Image 1 (cartoon, one colour):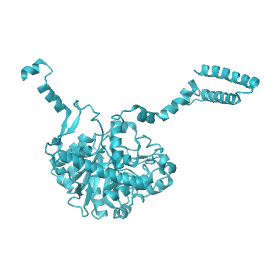
Image 2 (cartoon, one colour):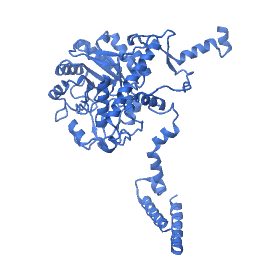
Image 3 (cartoon, one colour):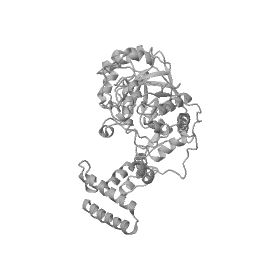
Length: 502
């Protein structure tokens, strides 16, 4: 291709020169062809890109198509039931509820429900009355002095740095309007979080906001910030679903001088939080750390977040709670399918236990040790609709957190550019120009309406199942497609053997 490019290019250039000499035309064309040939020479002599060496100039189209591939996929190829991590239908329902408009869909389901992997709710022929009051749950165990009344649905951990200041402001103002909490993420408690909404302050391995010069935990700084009236709960982050065992990642392009000052790090460098804590290194140390934070915060609810890996390690933590007679007020369970702004692909795709078995395991472990009544379980795994809330409750959750659901309510279009500072909607970027596109007053209303309408949808599903209270929900409320297969084999036999059995 390289030889053809230069052969035809030189011939075209000569022709354009002749036309220009004899007819005084094609002057601009001559300049363009000469410029393209010059670029072609540069392409063929550089050693970095094989595509450009073999396909001079034309190779640039490869990079162009690669750059816009996500948009082509989303707008021209995906069906409404396609799209990863969330389908167009799932994104649309969030947009509709956030805008407080009709969230119905026409002409029936687009899913193939006659399959073994189908899931649905067993509705009652005599449904209950829909409760208009949005559900709340008290968080606070036997040692908690300041229990907190939490909404069933809240904003999951997303740091300032990963998200823009306008996004953080809009989330917190929306949380204030709706009476639900906003988890800071491990990036620390900032002025943008303090817009009047309730806060769950997450303490990660970097101890941002409560670290000393060496990067270790600073008890005095923690005590000062944890006693802020807006801080209602404190969450120790052990691991997160998208990259368990790795620690947080803030790309250098997002680490502005403002963020570096807040976190106590060097600006314009990639910030890698340590994989593990320095304040403790085992189960006994974790429980002692919980007790320390509870004392420093004057008895506010203290919990921890984790993605389940080795199940025996969680069991050891639970045994240590009993040994020390010290219990967290809540445990947040994150699934391996959890989201993040930046993670190595191997960690996103191949580390950690998925949300469903992890939540069931944690719930059953606490029950088997007779300590379930002392601890609230919070689920954090692709919570985006009333159905997903009811499903999480059925598997053992008391409370649900959503990150990407609330990002969609802010206007996120799943552009998959969270990690390169070029989010087109101003949600996951520190680019001031892009950030201006996110209007705080408008988006905070959308956060509020998404929360309100999603919980109302959960209440409607609860009533459809014939239940009046979320305490009545368990896995028996749901059915799976493999049950239909059994019924089909029983009543519509597909071979003579089954007929004779009847």
